[in-house]
Length: 125
Image (tube, rainbow, N blue to C red; front, side, top):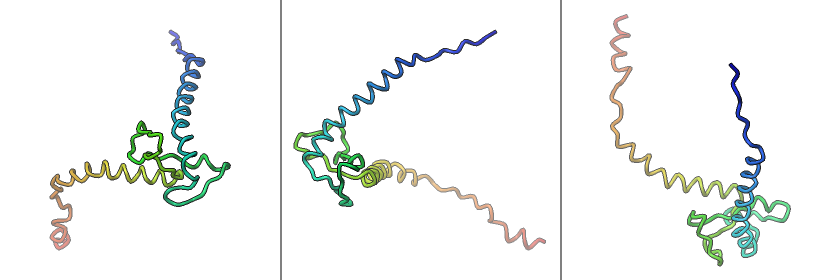
């Protein structure tokens, strides 16, 4: 018995990837282009300056973390370098999800002590 492998339609997959990339670029360019026109090319946190050669390392951060909130005056945006942007999102995630982990601490800790009778065991020898 031979097993027939189903080959994915490469043209269809390529079209899906192309469409997804184009949609992402259009969405990013809509507010990224505006933000780059509104603000100086300087990271809002570390004050690193950017030029045309390294401008891809400068990102647009949404202050309220809502990527659909893009007012034309740029009031929800700030330009951050890749590193500061990652740091900002890490801090946000820690704040957002850190409270969930702190609730777990109300669970009683284990009371088992594997060395509780160690002294008596050593004395017997």
